[in-house]
Image 1: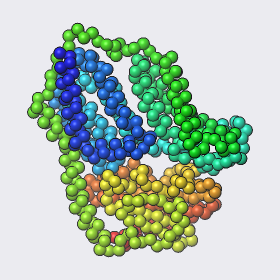
Image 2: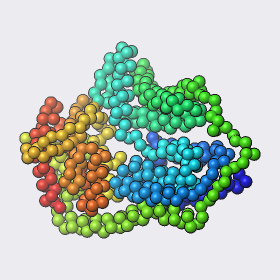
Image 3: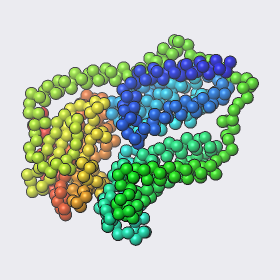
Image 4: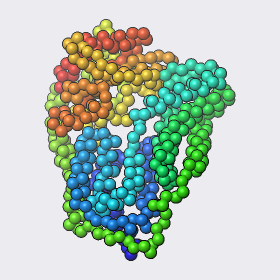
Length: 500
């Protein structure tokens, strides 16, 4: 009896997953592409097998839980599917993927009932750890890694000079690059820590404490790893801890940290939770009702609300975009407005932009200007994307980040993000970034994404612009940028308007 019910549940679940992959193929494709292309998020391939294993461990428990299709859950299936459509429209991948995995939960509720949701709350929640999120932490983790490294170098009495992410000692120079930020180890450690906590601790405070311990140890450990690489390089006169050795030593150090965490976890562990103990299979199983074919068809119709809306919207946008492109092409295209080539080794890269505007200011402010314009966005063409760069990361690193705003001579407020970047030669540049959609300016990426979403829904603007201003003046960069933005910022807007 148990086996028959388990097989039925597995068959229904498999059918749900197949329908999900078919209906939401675009989201799954993007997700898999990220897992494949990024070492940081490659663990995503392991999450679903782990979830299935966690469910299998509970098969005897699930046999005692009554199941019944939920009519109420139909509303949440449709609502979540619509939320997925809105998220896909905004091209905020994290929210889109959150909505995608939320569909697994509401579908489970619809087909099996809320008691199953409560019984599988951890396996279902564990799915969210496959969402690629954390890139926004990279600059801050780089700063922490550099801070710890420099502090330890000074403790050991080694002369050191730091400029941004560049660390110089008598025997050589080091760069705390994005790959050295420790984001990969942090995310992997958190994932392992959450799973370990669930399997070994029954008390909530211990689970939270162990996960926090994993976060702290991984961040501090990465700083110590960077310091050890510098120390080994110093002691070996730069003959070790460089090139391939760098990755080998780093991998060994991270393995040691994981072993230490597991040892700590072993001594913190509780006796096996009663709910996880094998259940006597002779006990009477609860009645389980399975959905009818009609109910399954209704659920699938609610599930397809999002994909159908997305399909219709994309067709409509394709027509409008082709008209807009044709209209722009009949005038002076923005892509031809490359007025003056300037210092290319810092230049922003927005490879999928529909047009770019590059110029060196002819005013007394001496500011370099870069504008990338997007007439519309697609899954492969976004203003906020990991493919886009504000400067060449092979030659420059971030020294500081801030957000500010300035009021122009006409009383208009301009918000902006400010970056100080530095290269190995000690040269600095000030870079200010402003995003614009339908004439509205923003410096916050999330706010800008929401503004884009509102304009797409209202059919007023399907793309947007990014404006990057930079000055290399060593002591007066901020003053020159302030002067240009105060007097001439909206001249850029007028020139772009003339090109439409």
